[in-house]
Length: 292
Image (cartoon, rainbow, N blue to C red; front, side, top):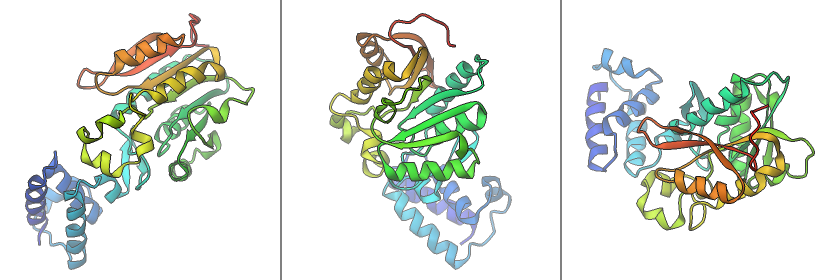
């Protein structure tokens, strides 16, 4: 089987199994198996795959045809220009979450302080915590997750990107691990679970079947983790501190309403490439002070 034949067969197979991007998925599978850039596939389309690589390709193709996440097969996902280890049991980083990073880095960049205390709630692979640490040397991040598997992956990613000295890891729900500490934070950032358990059948099969439930679903309302953040955030943030959260499609208004009911005010929203409000920045308990 040549590269060209593998791509044609793979794209056709995945299209039959109703994958959204069958050609792109086939390209990524072949490129990962060959450990090459995707451009190589079209530069050398007649290159032969060895028998071992053909077997692996067919195994991966079968799994992908079952909507198994491509990132779990490849073992990695790019986020904000860096590669992150991902595996089953770890939530896969999404490009929309980069909006939170951009907002956080802009806020942190306004400070003249030597150290910036941050909490990343629901750290998953650690993509947010690690990126903050790499992009902002003054950042000291508390990476929190309820999953020990996620925290293990986050630690590995911090070590790989050589920023583990800036990050502390806590196993627990929401902000509970930090509530007893005296130190107050400049920033809390979170991409929380926000899908209602009632919507399980309507979301992508790759998500509902294979990604960890605790990172996807948040009770019948889909807002339970937001409520925890809004109730606990004021206990760990400085008066001028900020809370940055991601929201699902069409959920920005209800999240903002929930925040306001719990004493917060909306400072800013940011839209994704589709024009949907995805990132919201909240001020803590009615404070109107500027950041820092």
